[in-house]
Amino acid sequence: MPPENAIERSELREEYTQFVGRKLLVMLASLLGIVLLMGIATTLGSADISPAEAYSAILARFLPGQFQTTEFIDTIVWQLRLHRVLMAIFAGMGLAVAGTAMQGILRNPLASPFTLGIASAATFGASLAIILGAGFVGGQYLIVGNAFVFTMLASMIVYGLAKYRGITPETMILAGIAIMYLFSAMTSFLQYVGEAEEVHEVVFWMMGSLGRSSWDKVGIIALVTCVCTLILMKLSWDINALGAGDETAKSLGVNVEVVRVICMVLASLITASIICFTGTIGFIGLVAPHITRMIVGGDHRFLIPASGLVGAILLLGADTVARTIIAPVILPVGIMTAFLGVPFFVYLFMKRRKGYW
Amino acid sequence: MVKITIEDLSFSYGSNKILDGLDIVVGDSEILSLVGPNGSGKTTLIKCIDRILKPEGRILLDGGRDIRSMSSKEVARYIGYVPQSSSGFLSTTVFDTILMGRKPHMGWRVGDEDIDHVVKIMKLLHVEEFALRDFNELSGGQKQRVLIARALCQEPEVLLLDEPTSNLDVKHQLEVMDIVTSLVKSTGISAVMAIHDLNLAARYSDTLVMLKDGKVYARGDPKTLLTEENIRTIFGVEAVVINSLDRPYVVPVRPLNGDGHDI
Image (cartoon, rainbow over all chains, first blue to last red; front, side, top):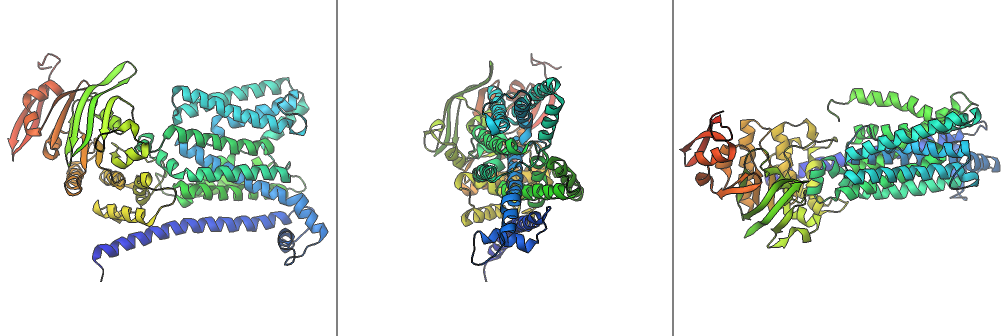
């Protein structure tokens, strides 16, 4: 018989393995939820197709011998609906991952990708294009190019200002707030001088929509989101250490300033590449990390991917409801994300123990 | 073997000099306590030794290696830091908090040996019964034990402790100090502590370093250093020192003004 200590050690080890296993199970369940929701979302629209037909049309492209579909259903799924569904998945995933990273490195529950003034900068860039027709890239990418460039510009200004005083959560948040108000004021000025129709277009852009999706946009968003998410996951131990305080992180061998800047750049890049195509969808990046943290805890090794999956479910669910609730009118998805996410968030918030933050 | 050699170490916040030309040596299996009034530079010195702050002068570790030539991971493998308190921002379990101490030794993936190490340290510090509880839900004494466990998971040669007993009641103060002493004696590591309580310092330290205005005022064993005159000079306090059970006990009587007279 093994000594008493050995038994207790193995029990403790087993307990921890099960604890980690439960987190992986949550992620697996979320992934299945996305696949299920994807099928349902693809069936919804003016042309009536069943979930089985939708899945067959998707799988027929990969396994043509095993699954059959008609040309009509193939067109509906692949050319009209699936890219929008995938855009919702990757955009939701990206915004949630960016929010998780920002909350982690800034140690602030109110942080989101927009804390650094990103949304205001993107809106100003879009407004500049819509109202004055001015921008960095011409043609059909005028608004997109402006939103992206100004988003990254805002991040660089925040970095520059914070660097001057030392890269801490406080300096980054204060610099972000200053940038946010500056770009908001400039947007208000543009709206003041703009025509009613132009202002209407700006307001619609600000509400966020997945209606402008296409396969090439999905490709860009998916690529940026996946690459940045993988890098952030690689940094998850560093983000965990930052959560315990800068001094503790330094004592554990973390280069605090470098990690904070890398995470900020990655979060900004993800957000910029999404909102330049969709407009500002703000709620996901703030709340998806909170919801996920209440389920899987604060370990970023699991929190980052799980939060991405929850963000994908939230945005896909919100877009599906937005497309169908008063069809044929499609509501802006930015409105629906808050309507759906807030009740769920409040429920979890009330059910969870005190002292969560 | 010498664990840490500090040579001519100075540190300033802008024009405000906090540490001024310190020379200190920490030996093998030694508990060295830094004592002195608020603002004398105890905590700053601890942070300089762990390279949280960047001082002037030299700090030699690991048989004479200059700390500036070592990577942050190498320093983290040599020195474990126990902060005064931990602002647990996120909800993390005790197990994960301690596992974080393996960071200087592991990559992204947690290996079996890392888990085994955590489990071993948890048992050593008797924190295994709340392994999966949230760190933020623990009492002050339990938190302190977990923070020491995290530092021990780094497999350090030196443990730095910043006011390890300041937030604890008497029982937990003794408990934490007993743990530190037994670790030092059983594993051969050394400990450097910033500490306010002179009686705890006297009871548990091999060596005291008295700091005053950022300089070393005196260094020696507690029995020699804890005199009424030294306490008056360093702390500006009239005190009675009673020697009992082969240890000095400091009983503070009244604060004195700058001239050494009653306020």
